[in-house]
Image 1 (cartoon, helix red, strand yellow):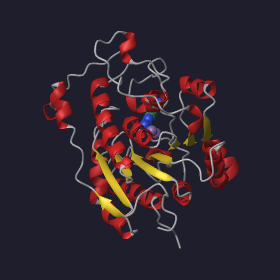
Image 2 (cartoon, rainbow, N blue to C red; image 1 turned 120 degrees about the vertical axis):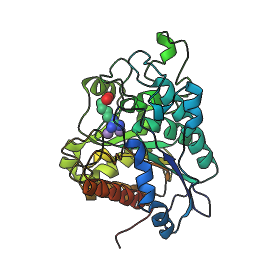
Image 3 (cartoon, rainbow, N blue to C red; image 1 turned 180 degrees about the vertical axis):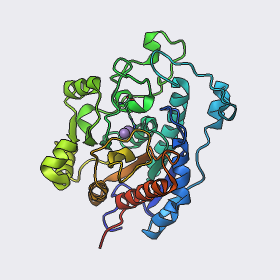
Image 4 (tube, rainbow, N blue to C red; image 1 turned 90 degrees about the vertical axis):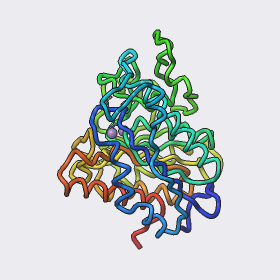
Length: 332
Ligand SMILES: NC(=[NH2+])NCCC[C@H](N)C(=O)O
Ligand SMILES: [Mn+2]
Ligand SMILES: [Mn+2]
């Protein structure tokens, strides 16, 4: 673990935050992602890399459902849309609890590894990271920008919106007349120059306008083709660290498995062709580990119910292998 993050305390500890949650999008099964990743042996694989691994079971979010009067097993979800936002109270409460868990691990000098679950969870993970490291930068690897606002979203699925909440550029539900105020817990602590995207290829029209308006740096698959992944990662890191002191910012890596090409990671809810190769995905993870600045990692959107058994196994195995690459596994 030679170049393990200089921000992580000894004994170097990974805290696995398992989040079986699907409320940010409509497809069942993504809540099974973290269970499959752990059952595939991920905790042991990380121990084998020299980490101390802390995993106290997956989050259950039961109290949250009880509080909302939901009974998911019986199909009762009392969480009507607010404006276009679907499941707003549930997503807000769940991500709030994830922010607290990730924040407390990060403040103790542990490296939180959040296993999703859908990508709305990143509202929680990145808020948690920023509570411990206010000047952290974010590398968001995804086919999608997940930066829709209440105005621009076509689907109302909150997994397409977390970055807008983190930047504070979407309206809070309270401001358009909702009596309760889901998401009012989010303190938008991220700024547009501290997030950079890699792998984009399915960006909604409204999202393109937002990226332009805020000058957000994005390396789409077009740039990956043009410059190669090596140069893209180098430029991405230069961008987030621009003007920052020596050593570089603490880095939060949020990896949506759909950034990979569907031939590599087929079992995910919103696959888009033309994605990263197996090696390109791993190269990103390896390079960020090498900076010594990684402070938190998300692996999101593994959905083990959207493909046949072999494709599920492949997707879960790739997920584990990306995480290992981001946490110090090397080829030699
Ligand atoms: N985390 C994801 N897989 N997001 C997909 C988002 C798709 C689309 N842009 C939407 O807003 O619904
Ligand atoms: Mn995506
Ligand atoms: Mn995503």
